[in-house]
Length: 117
Image (cartoon, rainbow, N blue to C red; front, side, top):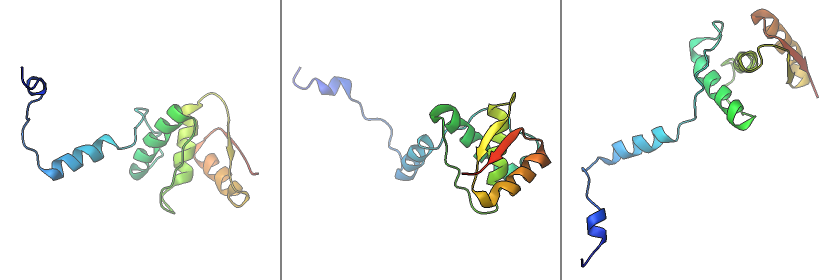
C-alpha cells in the first residue's frame, strides 16, 4: 500500500465556516445543572442559576459576573438553597451588602447566615 493514511482518512461533507464556528462556540458553552430553580427566580435569572450551580458542583466555586441589577443576590441565594437544603449556608458578602442580603434572604425564605469580612 503506497499511502496507508488514504485508507483511514476520508473527506466528509463540505461545511460552511459559520456552521463550524457555531458548533465550536456551542461546545464551549458553560455547563448547566439540571436542578429546578426556585419559583421566585425571574426567567432571566434561571440560566445563571443553572450555570452557577453546575460550576459549584464541579469546581466547588463560581464567579457570577452578571450585569448590575440583574439579581445576582437572588441567583446566589437560589444556588445556596438548592445545594444545601437542610441547613444554613454561610454567605460572606461585602459589609455594605449585609443588610441587603439579609432582607433578600428573608423575602424568599432562604436559610442563610450572612456575615462580612
